[in-house]
Picture 1 (cartoon, rainbow, N blue to C red):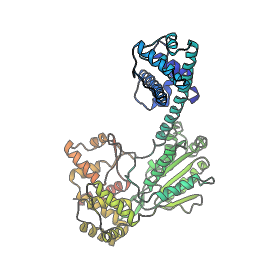
Picture 2 (cartoon, helix red, strand yellow):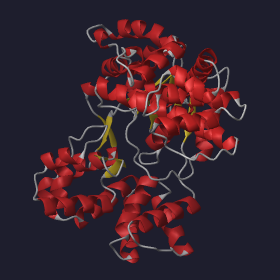
Picture 3 (spheres, rainbow, N blue to C red):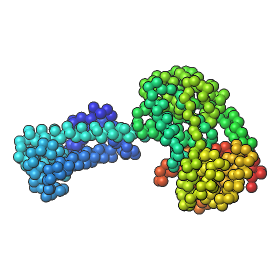
Picture 4 (cartoon, rainbow, N blue to C red):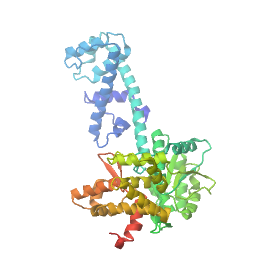
Length: 504
């Protein structure tokens, strides 16, 4: 609803509808204030709006009474005598605003409806003057409702901006502030680049950084929308090497189709990629959009993708994440994500241990050794902390040392294998059943459906996966969302399923 459509006439009709048999202004049911209360019928919305307007008027009336240090003998007047006495008191301070809110309240919101002539007599004014005070109150109420509606519109817009973002897979981001500040600086420059690439090793936190930046922009609410598409094009083979895979669900055509869908233009589904992009360009040019393409890691696909998206670079901003650098593209601004420092790594590991109920301070030499082996990769640190909660420190260190001697690429594989060996059979079964989990995560009912264990065994298995950081939990405590990290899925597909016969 447009702010200008909130008028004194419509608010008067809404207030009067509660006292008299008058038509309710249904245009007011389109207020964003009501949209925040989902699941209500039009009748319920009407009642809520009337109650809310009454509450606004009551609060303002009380504020002006307090300003006049007014003591109300009957704080909730119900009888005709009590109402007229309180109204007379409100009109005795020569305060026009107090009189206006009082006249408005007792004209439309009082439990006992008195005629205007009697209200005017109690206020010691003529009916015309009393009606003027009522109109003044309505005008002030219009201003108040408009401001509340603008605030509600802002809150809803911020929620809308987040609707395509994946659930967060982190409790706290370490070392992110300088990177977020750099992204903000690039984004706010007048002669800004249209393409920004967040680059680094797997597990270094590229997706988390991209999401945190999107969340930061959503809070500012200066964008028309934020679009998010995940593009996974590689897998980790048993030798610890990245290999391209053929996945039509993450082709250039599918990326463009998903962008069109998120923009509400599903009618473009049957068009060619170039035609879709041409049709999307006017929409994106009408306001500021941020498009995030996550896990953009196959150089062959990038060579097709970036030129194809070039038609949109004048109307949208692109944020990419990739293990491979895009620095050879002159129009791409790259942001390498460095490993965590020793101090940041310690904070992450100790924080993870504390979250698991273990208040542990790791000695400096031991922490230096861990940091040297793991290299400051957040996901590796998180998984290692999960092992430290269940295994002796020296056992964990020894295993990491042996894995690092073979090759640094196989370190992740070792960490996952060691964690897998610590799982119970039911936890293993539950973890494997989640391979088809949606990129946006699933709720607890979906998990139970995919792995129909007895309730007590299911809860123990789920808790074990959470303890070992193999499953990520987001959302509210009342409605949690569960997901798997992409590297966890890769490990299960390439190390467990492909070698199932050798896994005990």
